[in-house]
Amino acid sequence: MGILDLEKNFAFYAAYHSNPINIAIHMIFVWPIFFTAVLLFNFIPVPFDLPSIHCALFGSEIILIFNFGFLLTIIYAVFYVCFDFKAGSLAASLCIFCWIASSVLASLLGFQLAWKVAVVVQLVSWIAQFVGHGAFERRAPALLDNILQAFLMAPFFVLFEALHTLFGYEPYPGFNVRVKEMVDEETQHYRNMKGELLS
Image (cartoon, helix red, strand yellow):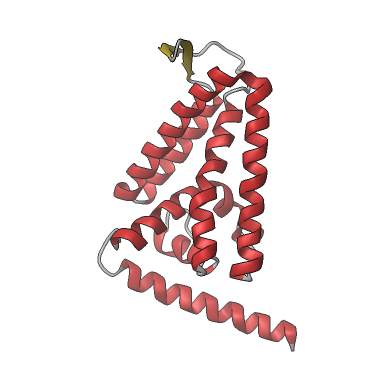
């Protein structure tokens, strides 16, 4: 599967997320995982001086540092734009917003409180998704078969799913039809394999 093959990658994701409740859980909890990961990356020290932007907010000094949090954000943003320009640009904008907001939160909370907030959000978000897969989807999460899906592609795909569901978005004519065919084929393959294991 090509890393930038949108049809195959989205079909792979969609095959693991067909239950509406599981989809809703992912839409709620995937982006907070990205946000808190960027928040934690703000505290990783860099071995050299990097430029920063200083501004005041609510009487506190806010510092936007071009650090590892920014680097993570740029990697995700560029990847998403390469995936699909329209939806990817929106996802990239959300990534940059997460970096700015997490930098503000990091400045306001400091490391001692920020890491606790991040750990709680991460735990709640991951547990919710495993519950979604176990109780509603009844299929193991995609990360067990493709860890890249879980960490790099998931934020884009939940946004892409929302755009598709709410606005009927497709990057080009025929995309949704082809993806549905691939999802049906993958779902049938999974059911056949599950049937063989149970028999």
